[in-house]
Length: 246
Image (cartoon, rainbow, N blue to C red; front, side):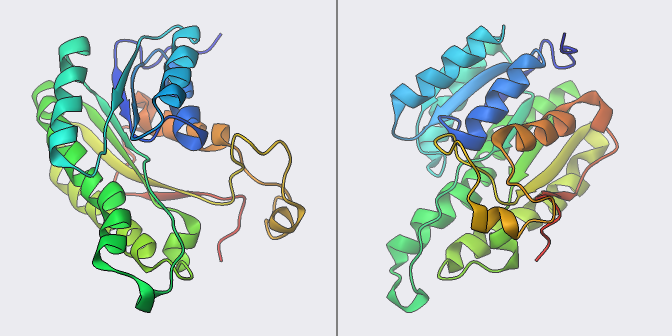
């Protein structure tokens, strides 16, 4: 039986309607954590995740809204705190990754990527950090990405946002470590989507392990970083990519 190391805790997981976000939500639920499920458009998918969380033995709350918008985050935070009283863990997973040549990019295109990745991390941290400080315990787990860190072809705002999230991680980890709060970034490599039942042979061949990762591989790292065992790990970017470092 899974050790319920996060029993009594609550996690807000952005973009948890599918893929990595869903995997993280379900894994944290198995560790005893109640989950605030977030999606921006597909409420049915978010409710499917909530059902999986409930089956794992935890409580779930669905909060729909764009995490890149301050009013939406304020509303979701209010609902989460009203239901659970606390939010102890924030997982900033939501992002968008469209491809577009830089010179064809509008200001709207730029913000459509920057806001859900970078601005969202600022907004969710601002919403939930005060409670963590009051309780003397908290976990913030941000997301980068191997392609974003190396330089995303025709994805300038993706790389810019994820590098900035890494900077935010380092800054917040320094500021809030004395308060019992850790802040880290997970950088996934080649990860299969929920809809993919087999590895893409070409992509898998470029990975030293010889296979692509799954949402569960990323969720396992998030679970560790959220746990009491990771109390001395903060300010780090941890790559989960099968050894594919370039």
